[in-house]
Image (cartoon, rainbow, N blue to C red; front, side, top):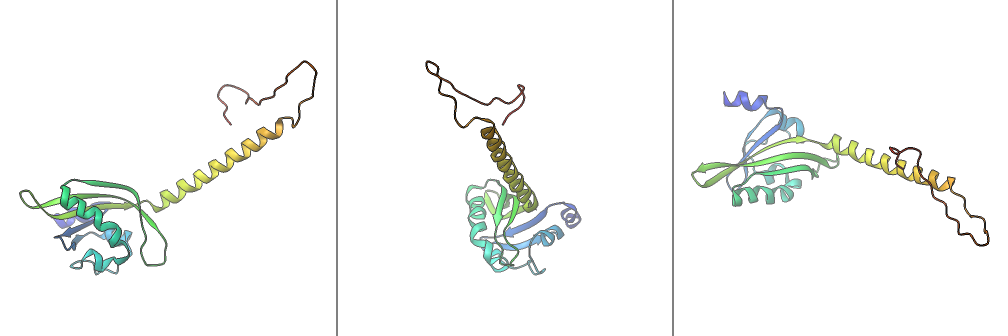
Length: 166
């Protein structure tokens, strides 16, 4: 029954057991979200994913040490599969072996690579829109004001209406 529950979870699940971080349990989403050839069970994290182990191990060790939950948002992982960086939201939770002793770490995760890519594109578009708006605003301003004796002139641009921002 536990296996059916784990398989139905819409996130990747991985149970790392012991200080050697041996992979003891994964679900199908684990295989769908990570570059894995289906041989994860029984291998250590370092054996299965050598390119990301150095990045992931400190978080797992912190869970062992502090016995607390760690949540990572849009965490970048660089696998050695030539695809490029991937981003994940992950939660690392301690699993007790005996009272007061952490025996393993349960990791649940979902890929956010596409969301990160879209957010960066939108940020780039917003920056470009601000640049264009600034250029337009400056183009509406006179380059030089007339020199009138006894008067100091200034010019400034105010967008029409209270709700408009540039």
